[in-house]
Image 1 (cartoon, one colour):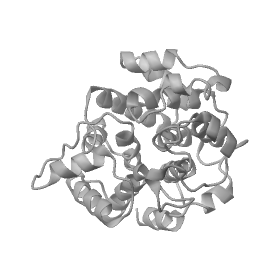
Image 2 (image 1 turned 60 degrees about the vertical axis):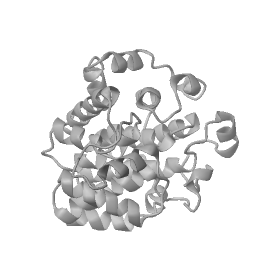
Image 3 (image 1 turned 180 degrees about the vertical axis):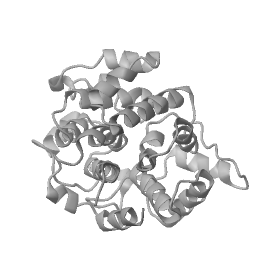
Image 4 (image 1 turned 90 degrees about the horizontal axis):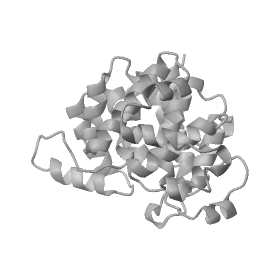
Length: 288
């Protein structure tokens, strides 16, 4: 029987794939031409960077997260050194866009046993680490060390701590909004991002000002805007897609917060069934 943490994992991957069609499309006007209403269909990526990827595929964030799940499943636990090797193998054997955090970390790992990767402050490091919450006994240090495999910087540490605290509280039974409110004062960045949350009807209009880019400084504010205003996960993913930019990394964090609380209730069966790695995902989860 599936549990809350397994449903959470499924939501993270579906969120990435559903948002992948709009990934790195920054024009909200173009997105309004391409989409209408609640988004419940996969689209092939529009951005030139993802040539060869199809509707229902994972972005490079999702692929790295899938490598983490596979490592946990096949080894029956999480081990950072083992995952570093599994991560390298997955990247070498699968087609995906390679961003700077990935290429710079791979370069650092050549002829080295280090577990500290690139100096990079993008949200993708936290997004690709979210499958770790499949494990009940993880610590804040475990999550931080995993993020550090590819992303490092003060804002990375601040945001990893915030995400870890929120996730642990929600998985323990707390409403996700209460968990966010409980942790909004962890640091000035989180506090400022929370205080500037606007209304639902302004999310897309204010996306450029809030920040559509890949950095945590730009990505997390829209995450907070969306989770605070959306009525359910599918609406949240729609709002996030329409905000443009780095849709996939944000979607994974949004899905983690909301699905840890509400599960997959708002996600239609056709969306679940349309995810291209669903069979592989279920096979890995069955082994755990």
